[in-house]
Length: 358
Ligand code: NAI
Image (cartoon, rainbow, N blue to C red; front, side):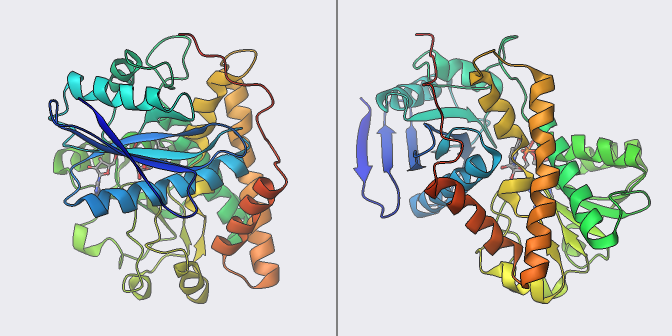
């Protein structure tokens, strides 16, 4: 039997903890804000060591989804879920039980793929609830990572334009941390842009394969942050930019897809003081969300329309970088203000409810 407990967390619309001892489900779903539409966010399946760690992660990720969706104009709110489990040992039973929990929220939270979950997992969750996006079907939006990678590339180009007066990345040294779904596609785009790639990937086989594909230099884990490069692109896990790491960094720009790259948002000030231009993660990595929410477009999903929408990341970031420079303020603060502006004025609020097939 599934037991659902509501947790009272200030600043969040709804947070629940769900357990089903029979299949081993232990999950949290956080709905941060729904003022622009129902909350949509990925299902992260990860072997968190403690409940607190899982709860902290889901809360931070849900909050970032609110800002991401607002600035990208997706007509959705901020939400996220985590399942405390190893992605290699998750079962269909567990995913279906999780689907039942999503269903109990009546469409206030829409599940999507994230670290540790796959489009196939979404199909299993779909057996218990209609409130799922990015299913592996031809009418669905499919793998979001190609749009996340494209948006990240466009964000890097905006940063290059701002800092060096040209959006060209030719001959720039770019260190990508994490060559997974997003990182590997980004590496491919950057290779054809003429960039010199450095890669840090914890899976040695993957690192060798990607390095050979792009003539890239493999960077040892211990040297990731101290290696000189033009752009550092975190595309693995979040929380990697810490107060201790910042003095080590020898890059001019940080522009990557990972969520919550800064351990805390105030580190935006430290980065500004070190003259490192930081592209706020929830703006540069919005391509995947833009893709997933385009499934709900009244005319149906169209990849070319999504490409157009993702292009806006370039202009959004360029505007933000200019504003940060003019006012000598960190990019993180300007991003936060932008998100509040959209939310306070309900800009981009979903006009028509999403139509769900039962
Ligand atoms: P993924 O799981 O496919 O790839 C992550 C890669 O990073 C894996 O190859 C893993 O071996 C590697 N890795 C993990 N820790 C590492 C470390 N300490 N050093 C070096 N390599 C490490 O994940 P995906 O989908 O590529 O996402 C990457 C990041 O971007 C995540 O933080 C995710 O939340 C974020 N993101 C992804 C989106 C998407 O469309 N897939 C959308 C928005 C954000």
